[in-house]
Image (cartoon, rainbow, N blue to C red; front, side, top):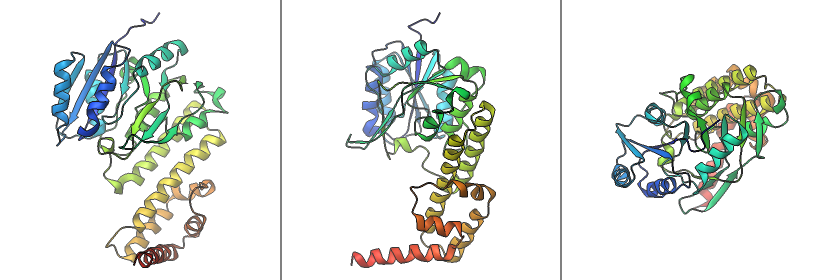
Length: 342
């Protein structure tokens, strides 16, 4: 029988988040569940983040503080996993925060449901603490087998499944299968971690009774806001990884496959829009780069799954590979906006 007071390790990577860091750490040390190990890893911050971490570690013996040269989100979280002593693991970004009973609720739900992973909703907020979008699905059990045919796609489509935050993991499952964040990947590395974890799980439990508060578009939450040129490469790798996971678990239902390819289409679409808006780049070079993307087999497979939220005229031109027309259309739109503000 499980001990109802097991140690839980809460890993917090820290990078240039001095504005929100105190609120984050305070929300963790004030948890109603007291048997926690708080692992703060300063990832080469250039602001006062390290000083703030030291001030808290001097006051609370449950805090373990590591200071390292800047290594990125994967290496930073792996450093926390390497020293974590808890039977369960949580991750929190250094500018986010959690309600006072968050850890206790997720832990009790994990024991009660006999699940391998518990997930909570995510409430995105801005720097003024204004509520933006609430990511939430129906609560309850989500089995990773044929019983999930009618509802696993809800998790797959949501933002909830992809990040390491808003969850509680079993530490022995992570260590047994040597699950780590992939170094050298600055986009979607957390999704790959979760997919690998899910391969060895049978059931997820979703609770809607507590919410994780995620600060949108902040520096600290943007440990991975770089290497944009590699994002489409990583998106294809993630697509293939998720597809293999669905095949292995017998979850290749139409809803899941559709969501998977829509996600890949969006990655291509966003990359193409980014290329279009590159400044000081010749039209011919943009044309060549986009044409190369549109000849890829991955892109062609997404054609049957174009998302409804993308503009129809852009999707039509992409489908017909009318690249010059697309480039000129965006150029004319840009010129017309310039005249509007004259």
